[in-house]
Image (cartoon, rainbow, N blue to C red; front, side):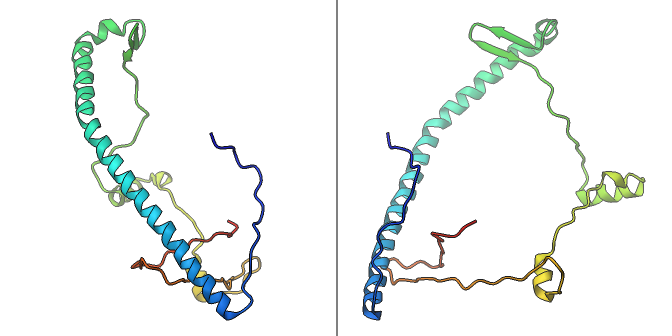
Length: 179
């Protein structure tokens, strides 16, 4: 079993001193990312295969379980009044079955818009939730000067090494961003 990491320290970093060394490092970075990409792709393929195999094994068991539950219900339902005379759960040596009340819920055959209109029309607007939230896009678009609000834009460093495996879309992975 692997030990739990309790401390992390910065590794020794050899910093390029010339543009030529930076170019070599960029090439090495591309190769390293290619290796990571290959391993991640293999992992995804293996996971997909394992999921597929598990689903094939689970399907007949799921059907069997559902039939067993239906059989238990077919036995218990006609006897519900007798079985639940003292308690709603029946405990046997192999397990427990019984009945329980679900959490109350609101059901309607109308759309949310229709229900909102109905609640307002019948003077039950107290049951309509009004959500207030900051419209950050509007603030960024107009940038009004308001105490306590600032508009921030960072200058982030990026690296795009040439890789053997080209991706259709650029994915960015921040290695040291504080969240």
